[in-house]
Image 1 (cartoon, rainbow, N blue to C red):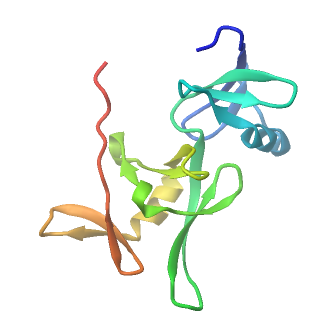
Image 2: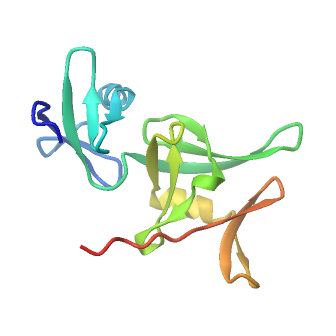
Length: 159
């Protein structure tokens, strides 16, 4: 971590709530401004970088949270699963980026594979409606456009 970049005193908790010095940031336009300027440095640390300033922030789990999950079928019969993210954007799920972490919480990559997103409880329950079980492989998967995407489990690292 570069020493010339100060901390922001900003934290994103595992539910996607933003805090400044322990107090919740309620104004959505401020949170969205921070999301628009959220980046990662070379070491993977999260930073907020604007034209005038740059600072490190603390991210408890994932910087984005999947608030809701929707399945759409287009007029051409192509299926897609869409995610409502904590920055209020709607993004198509890339099923290749799905994984399941500790406590069976699903995650995926978002924002052109730049960040990961943790599924909220509500998002998890909506997503679970699309999950199927393969008896032969003893594995869970989702099917999109006739293709099965198996859920990979990632175990936490021992400290």
